[in-house]
Length: 215
Image (cartoon, rainbow, N blue to C red; front, top):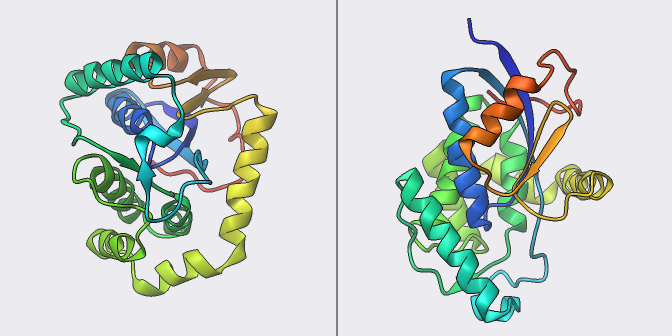
């Protein structure tokens, strides 16, 4: 039997480095029984649902160029081909939908999780568009009543607020961020870094939160 490894991940579906981190983390499944506490952070709450040009994010041109070169290198390493993006969008409804999907079975949650990433980064779909989100949810097997509940029930908004507070307390100010044992790694760190963290972690540590874990 594989040893159990509990991990907390802070992420957002409009963060390309979170998609890379998601793919890299999955590689630990060959050695561990992963129990992942996905905690979602809305990294650009000021983005409108209809989207806005990436140029409006305000990164200095040279910094943006280095970031994109780094992302492209990571994408090649992970065997994925990002579509050329010209816009960013608001992720709040996508994050609420993912939070609600946690109450479903593991397979459905992960179909939705993967579907959201692929829709945005591979197919240039707008995750701020409710019709796009409904279609992704249907394909993942999430029923319409769950979608509506995600967007109307205040408890899911409360969870996002709690995630934001806990990230601030842990001095996490970006995504992705991985917590394994007593260590925190920021960014889409190499698989070797995640494996090193796993090896030294006390896998018997109790979960960092009382929320359900998803293997």
